[in-house]
Length: 290
Length: 344
Ligand SMILES: Cc1cc2nc3c(=O)[nH]c(=O)nc-3n(C[C@H](O)[C@H](O)[C@H](O)COP(=O)(O)OP(=O)(O)OC[C@H]3O[C@@H](n4cnc5c(N)ncnc54)[C@H](O)[C@@H]3O)c2cc1C
Ligand code: SF4
Ligand code: SF4
Ligand code: FES
Image (cartoon, rainbow over all chains, first blue to last red):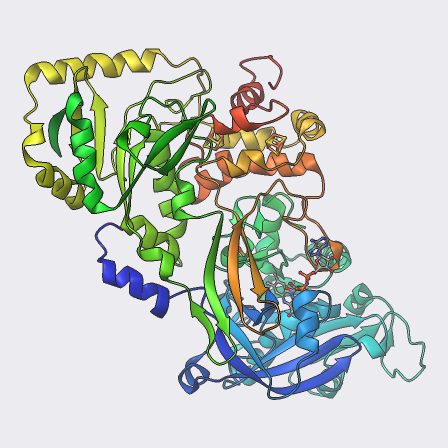
């Protein structure tokens, strides 16, 4: 590093600063379920808006000026560029500040970060997506990428479980996939207090009863709260999935997103740069992973 | 490498010339403790210090620094004011230079941290020899000699310092002081070698690090972690004083009565209960035992996997700073089973 000239280093603070957030405008706020909105954003700088791309499974650091930063998965697919969709649950300081925003308000974004899903590995295979609750947020990017590049994948299967129909994220969108012949979309709710749910009622693992799949040609991507991992991983192993064909997206506290601040470490890996997508094999080998 | 020698009696002259390369900071003493400070006069410098309370890291990754200024009209604008300041750190020990080389791995690879790297560029380092005390184990951590990471390094050979020139800027300093330096003679080399092997024999602590990553994996469930968890107060002192700890927190601070503010980063510690806390209250390292295990594990196992060496240089600061006497050397020796002594 001593070889680098002074001007390069100083310029890099201004020009190539990995912590630099870029302003983005909220172009749409969609109330999906209570405390869970879908925000559509577009970078103010047209150059960035036009060139920004990502891999499904990557995340961005979202800044609410004066409040702070939080890691959020990109829920939209890179096959639909121009805007970014973020599915955000309101839980704390930054997410509450976001919920006070309206269309046309400004936030700031840097990224994309993380490894994302190994697309080369997934192409040409069957893809099984299993999500519980907010776990659909990172998987939705992969789902639409696969649908938009349908020819590059074999069978596509989505399994998604929510507590009630009122808690189901992207409900209209997912229900509209149920009838399609080019993919299998299996939805379930734990219970249906309103009595208006036409689909399956029961816990997420029960959907495996409807599944016809050849594990040796399939990659599974799983995302959800800890309870989802507890039950789903076992089912997948029982079905014959090898541990490196099961992918999962992990959440950790993150302050930098670029492998410096130390907060997201699991064992000897950093979730922000080595993840957030890990194989089940990684998970078993890294302490405190799940 | 260019090596010259400097008469000890001329050190103050040398220091006065060095000022043209930046504000001179050196170890100073206050109530028996040492710290790097800006010198008012050369007589304040205590080059015979054992260790400073805080390592030189504070110059490169300050306890608190502004990364961006947020203004409603302009968004986040990088803060650059403090970065250009030129400082000469006079009298840095080999272990602390190794620690900076370790931080270079973290901040200078992958995504480059421009704040750290700019400071590293603008701060001159003059290394100096030391005498190990009862807490030093840098030799075990292979950090008792620095080969890179300094501009000049001074090694005591009696009435002279052998001066190793590490960078072009170091060479400029030597040239600027011109006649102060002279050629190294054969007898200087003999004396250097004698002192160097003598130093090796003075270490009181010894630690075998060769297969530590394997031992850590094998002893991941050992009882010792529970015992340490019972004792540890989660005060974070050990990370604050560590020259290789780099965890930080980031916060946006708003100026009262306006929408403008600063984004700052602050030292943090993996020993603090909130370090791995995420939304929804899930905490991946809830217990003190899991956190102290994590600190050791990350330094001696995790860092090796990522960067090929442990992120500990054996400076002994955490041993001195721990209010309950948790001693890294004792812990590691016990894990290895070479010593059944207690952990303190
Ligand atoms: C890779 C990745 C992808 C993610 N994707 C999404 C996504 O797509 N959508 C989404 O909604 N979320 C996502 N998350 C989670 C999201 O990052 C967190 O919900 C977010 O950081 C919360 O920030 P906040 O400022 O709103 O909450 P904070 O104010 O930071 O608080 C969050 C929670 O942390 C706890 N907490 C924080 N500080 C303290 C303290 N000092 N003392 C006690 N408790 C405390 C509390 O339980 C609180 O509820 C993702 C996380 C990661 C790592
Ligand atoms: S862990 Fe302790 S001995 Fe090792 S470098 Fe850090 S403070 Fe020094
Ligand atoms: S200094 Fe000692 S008591 Fe404090 S956090 Fe470190 S190990 Fe625990
Ligand atoms: S978020 Fe900072 S190291 Fe991963």
